[in-house]
Each structure stands twice: as structure tokens, then as C-alpha cells.
Image 1 (cartoon, rainbow, N blue to C red):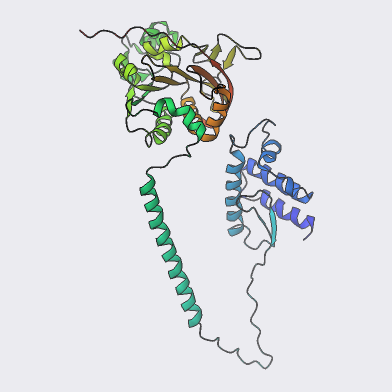
Image 2 (image 1 turned 45 degrees about the horizontal axis):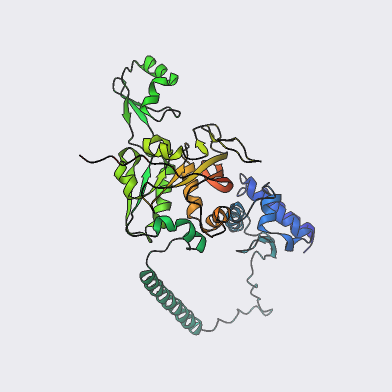
Length: 431
């Protein structure tokens, strides 16, 4: 098979209807094939494809960024579809085996069955011999496969029943990071979430939201809401927090999936319902902007980073750090944004408060994904760990999140600060 024949096979695929709108898949296939043509097939790797075909920076990590694996899976499916429909008679097929990226060029016959030869004397060919033996063997093979599947199914059910619910692999780094929250059955974990502020205008029978306004005390200062009231004749705006965004839902799912098998006492509560007894008696994981709750706002004042809608502000920048970690303008689905993860001791000794702080809907999802993924938790622990092996009591971590259509596709450590523990006001006395 010549290089020219291989190139023709490649061009046929690239110009096919199946790959018409798949620019990334075409880039990946062309890059891999050209490397194979040049005799560099053994150099093809997930990292090299990410840099050369997808334009990732040389510092990117395939462990954190799964784009190459995802696109390779899609490419295999597209090739299978192409040769099953548009090019079933193609003389050369391109194949990419599972777990590999080097393409294989395989000769293919349109009809592999040999033609039936007719004797020269014109006599009809002899009837084939009975195939009952072959049918018996096929039936036995099918029965054997069915039996193996049944045994495997029952075995897997017994393993799951004996091991209990399984989530992602629990590693030493996961144990180090999560031990303060899951180390005691006497202290429940309370997941509390921010619900966005909507305003109901009774006279207009409308719900309205302005993305910069998240507290009722901010409503009179909003020029946009004042214009809305004037235009709609809506003198009254009533607070409504009946809706949760998709980032909160994904965060709760990821955290529950990880925590529930290891902590029997897990609670869920909206931030507006959070009171002092909740903060005092539980380990708290807050999803959203912590400053929407007055008691959590006091906790955040002990930190070096301030999370706002527009940016994360660094109050005490270290050499080489940014003073502002800008968040992409609202409404943009793609691009990089920054998210803030904070952990502080709680008001009661041995209790902790962790905040997945983010003003934008998709960022709590990214934070939850980061702290439930063993690989990223290992990276985080390596940055935070003290010489003793423990983590600081209080710290804040800035993460950089790359988004595609509001889906976090890459999450990277940016910086962190070890900060002071907050000073709590005394618990109110019960009368």
C-alpha cells in the first residue's frame, strides 16, 4: 500500500458528510495520519495531540484536560459510521483502535466471498453438505456465552452488595483533604446552597432578575431595576428565591455521590434558612457566594480573596500574583473564569466551613468537580500540605476554569493563600 493510496483514503474521509461539521475531529485525524505517513507514529501521544492538533499550551496536563480522549472516542464512532454507510466499498479503511491514537490503514474487499465456479460441462455444482454440525457448535457457543454473562452478572451484584455504594477511588490525598468533614459520625455535613434572587412584580405579574443584585438591600441602588419599575408601572418588588441554577444542582449531585457512602448524616438546606445553630453544630459546605449570608460574610472577611460578580480581588498579593482575577463578562459561554474555594475552622472546635464561592452558575459545578476528583485533589493537596503532612486550618484557593458552552472542560490550580482563622461572635443566648 503506497503513501498516495493512504492519502486518498484520508481525503475521502475528511471530505465526507459524516465529518462535515467536525473541525476538531478532522484536525486530529489529519495530524495523526500525517505523523504516520512521516514514520512518526510511535511519537503520537495524548499530550502531543493536545498541543499540536488542539492548540493547548505546552504546560497543559492530559490528566486534567480530557479533550483528546473524548475526541478520539467520537472519531472512532464517526469512522465506523462512515464505512458502514457512505463508503462500504472503500478499498482502504482507516481504523483507530481503542486505547490508541495511531491510525491503521486496512485493505478491504467489497465482497470477500469467493465466486462460485461453474464446471465447463455445464453441470450444476453439487449441493452443499449438511450443516447440522456447524449449527450445533454455534448453539453451544451461544449457550456458553449466555452462561458466562449470567455468572458475571450475579458475581458483580454480589460484589456491589458486599462493598456497598462505590464512587470514585478513595486515595490518601482524598483522605487528607476530606478528613475534617468525614472523620466524625457525631458531626453531620450540612450542604447549604445559594438560591438566586428573583423579584416578583405583582402589578405586572412578572418575575425579573438583575445579575448584579443578589440582596434586597441592593434593589434600591439598581438603576436597571428602577428603569424596569418605571417602564412597567411596578411600584412593588417582592423577594423570591424559588429557583436553583444548574451549577448548584450539579454541585449537590457530585458532593452527595462522594459524601453519602462515607457519612450517614448529610443534610441539605437553603442559605436563607441557615441559622446560628446550623453553623455551630455542623460541618458546612456552602455552594455559591458566601457573602449572601450575614454570618458567612463575617467568615469571609478573614480571607485574603474577595469574590465578586466581576472578579476575585486579591487583597494581599504575593510576588508574581495578580491583584485581580478577572471573570469573563456575563453571558459568555466559553472562555476562562476564576473560582474561589475557601476553608475555615467553624465556631466549634473540630468543625469546618468550606465555601464553593462563585457568582456565575457554572463555577460551583467546576469547584465540586475539582474537589471530588482524586487526580485534582492530589494536585491541590501537594500545593497545600505543610511539612507535617497536614493541611492548614484556613486557606483560600483560586482555580482557573475553562468553559465550553458553560461546561467546565478544564480546571487548573492558580494560587492559594494560608489565611487567618475568623473570629466568631458569641452564640446568641436562648431566652
